[in-house]
Image (tube, rainbow, N blue to C red):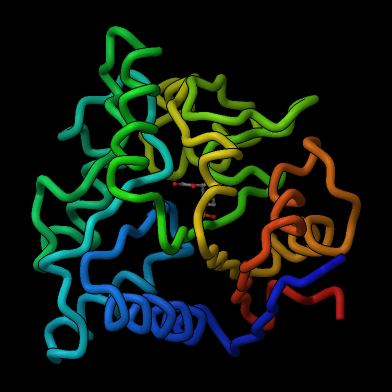
Length: 244
Ligand code: F6R
C-alpha cells in the first residue's frame, strides 16, 4: 500500500523551500530534535534556505542534533571531498548548531565495527532520528546503500559501485581519486526514523523516482523500501517527474 506523500514543486529552489518548511515545523515543535542529513547536490537549495531562515530569526539550531547518512572511507574530516567538510561548508558553519551535536561516520576509523556500532548507539542515545533527509542515486541508492540481494540493516562499510563512483567523480580531479568504499547508515537505520523527507530533482532522476515508488519493493532498488515506511514525503521538481 502506497502511503507516501508526493509533493510536486516547480524547480529545485521550490523543493528546497518545501523541505525547509518540514524542518522548520519540526524544530518549532521539538527544539532539541534529531535530524538525519544527506550530502550531494540535491539538498543544497534546502541548506541555503535553512541558513537564510535562521538568519531571519525563523529557526534556531542551537539545540538541534544531527547525524549524517554517510562518509567516504579513507577521507579525513578536513579532506576537501569528505562529507564532514561538505556539511561544514554548506550548512554547519553558517548555523548555530553546536559542533558536538553533529555526527558524521568517521572515514578514518580503524576499528570499523566499533565505529559503526558506536554510530548506531549515539543515535539511539539521542532518542532516534525525528526527521531523516534523503536524496536518491540513479541506481536507487539511499545513503550509500547500493542495490544488493538484501537490505542491510545497520551502519556498515560498503563498496561503491562504478555507477556511483562515476556519478561522484564530478567532485574529484579524476575517477581514480574517488574512494572505492564508504560507511553508511543501514536501511534499518533509515527506516527507524520517525519521519522521512526525500528530495529529488532533475530529469535524470525521473526513471529511478518512478521505479522506487511505483515499482516492486526490492533490494535491487534500495529506495523502494520507503513504500513500507509510515511517514514519507517525497518532494520533487517538474523535471524529476517527466514520466507524467
Ligand atoms: C549522500 C547520499 C546519497 C545522495 C545521492 C544523490 O549523503 O545520501 O545517497 O543522496 O547520491 O546525490 P545527488 O543529490 O548529488 O544527486
